[in-house]
Length: 333
Image (cartoon, rainbow, N blue to C red):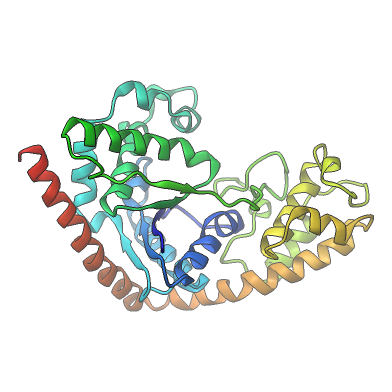
């Protein structure tokens, strides 16, 4: 039996290789399984927890849709829509805010990381966005949610909120408990300049990441300049623990080839980085360059992208508004 999948991507800046290998590549595989029902949301309400330039935001929303389609997600098979066009998300988030407890949110480590030292100046939205995330998921009765390790805590919160709602209103299993979908063979993608830091779109140096809009020449240049060490490649994964850059590049190669890290280590054992980098560049160009070209083409077809968003909105709104109608009856509105 197929899975009901829900996942959201924030329209903030350029998506990079880490986003592709950690999420989008997985979305494509889920979309291609005929048994699955997939809902992919551009979470623009989540994006405004920090200040956004309105014109940039509008452009980035289209860009996420272009990236989805260019990567191989079929809008005829999956629902692709923009969160802000479905009012049920914001309404249900408020209802769940009255169910969730302050103590639960205080335990969320992501807020502490994102707000930094001066949390008093962070927006209330940044603090409470895990509740909106719970609303997003629960509206579509998702059975599975693809998440990275950093979002696992938010999914547990979603399950706690669902359980409390069901108990408070004596509606057993009305809000379905979603399961996390975590990639087993996926290694976290780190910066090309520093193997101890996560690859990030906010990193000042563009050489630290492979963007999904990078062309062939950019990819070649970035891998050439990627930080390495002076030793030959190791014969086992234990030797990588003190070699973050080597571990990162071998992990990228493994993820792109749907292979295990151990298998990749066997292939390149004892070889030098220049030889390995050539193979890595080859595989990156093969996978990313066609996606990059297609994104650029689609970004010139605004009407086509807007049509996908509009059609997705109709399907998503139909599901979400029916769920909210039942929620009204349960609550007594």
